[in-house]
Image (cartoon, rainbow, N blue to C red):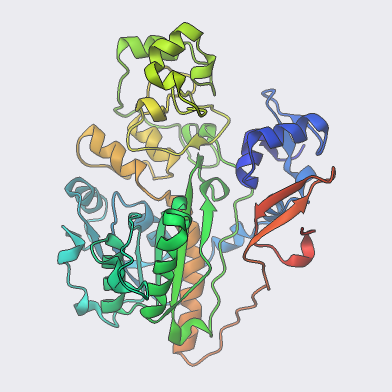
Length: 451
């Protein structure tokens, strides 16, 4: 028996449609399998020729868990929210000296769980970072994606005024960390036809930093039971950039599911503890009772569809978030700020109710002891907006390897970077049937056929 991968999970990992993978299954492109619960899919070992799967089969995850800091590297985080990124970076070994957050409930969450953290509450525009100049190793922040001005010809820092990215850039300019990281939604890559990212790249250069080619990381590949994608931008100060090498984290060896999140096992030692959660009104509950596990509005009788969906029934598109019930043996869809919104439903797989706060938190890989402050809505919002802890931890370990190299440079030593010459653009992979699949892949060129 190998490691099972459902058709849906393979589609997510490969970045192709479910219909494409189902065609592979039906045509025998790869050996079709079913697991003990009669789910359709493949064994990962039969897919070793696919670069993303091969990376999981030959993962260095276990080795990377033992990355330790050469010394206590200090960190500042902006837009800290409920602490997902901060907690992951702490697990990787960073010592936070300042965290800024505007939302008072999120600040209360941070202070409750980490009384020793220096949490600065309020608008980032009012924070003076100059006292930390040349005293902090690393700075990070998940800035919102906002449109920039194009008044200037250069497309630099001045063209980002009025945005929260400008505040992140200002903090970098005032602190001069050795490395900084920004994280954002995948949509930033194409936002405003790519102009937004172009200006960010110009600003990074203007600040005196070298940007590592940005990458979208899929949370399902980093021990997170959720189909969430985050764009990660890592920038190294120019006086170190040509002496060190950043290496992205290895993926985990398999895909985590809601069963891993809710039940005792590899991810958590106990079943998910009871906690408060939103409730469905009677009418909605009656509708959701008709939806099978993993199903959505399309599984409802047509008259119920029309009544429940209203005008949305007649619109185009899949609308697959409506009346959506999650599946226990799949990762969750990306969590939103509320589990019972009509357009982005997140119904429990086997019970007819929205996910609870602790179920939400587990899907984001927060520890059970991490408490969230504020109203029920405020808690859902903090969790839904967070960077998954295990994804942050994986990136944090890669950043810690980088910081260890920076420390070697500071000591007058030459770091052993041993980097592979890797492609940084989309490649094409040919299936055994001759079908071309486009992948966002970063594998040594010699290991696959390219179009």
